[in-house]
Image 1 (spheres, rainbow, N blue to C red):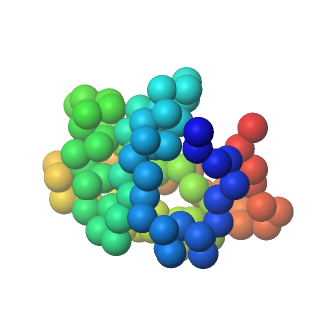
Image 2 (spheres, rainbow, N blue to C red):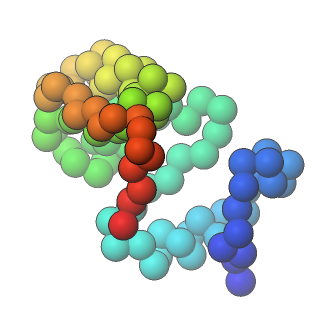
Length: 99
């Protein structure tokens, strides 16, 4: 059984357990693909293609996430020839939490 406890520190020290990811994806209702690694953003265009086909892309993030990865994701999608809709960026404070 996979632990539901996770932290950045423990994730950096331990190799990824693919069984846990497969189990989580099996239980997920929306997420179908997970990429973990130092160069994970390099696969954003391929992952988007598998998930959404030829549809236009929109990057949705809070200010913090957009600053760290949003522009890179937008550039990589654009470089792949993907039509992009203007990004939707939430305020960084208060912190947005998924339901």
